[in-house]
Length: 73
Image (cartoon, rainbow, N blue to C red; front, top):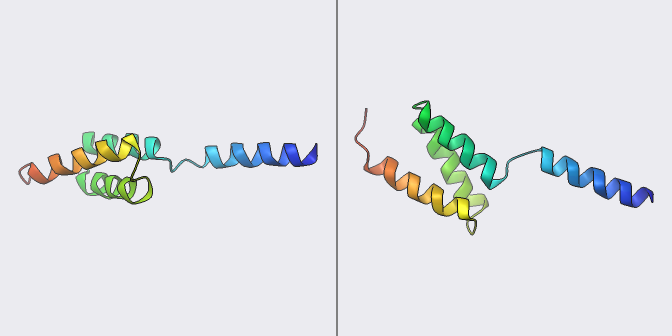
């Protein structure tokens, strides 16, 4: 019983820590809206490093290409 509770608590803790591909993608997109492209790029690159096979990685790659193609402000 105690092991089950401990495992459940650990699962909740890991989920609450964030840092998942979805959360990073949402943050990067928000940073783009705020015109903080430097931080958005960093987040997109981190998604590619940490979650290369995720659907979010495909979107991150797409957004990095778009940022590279955009004229500098």
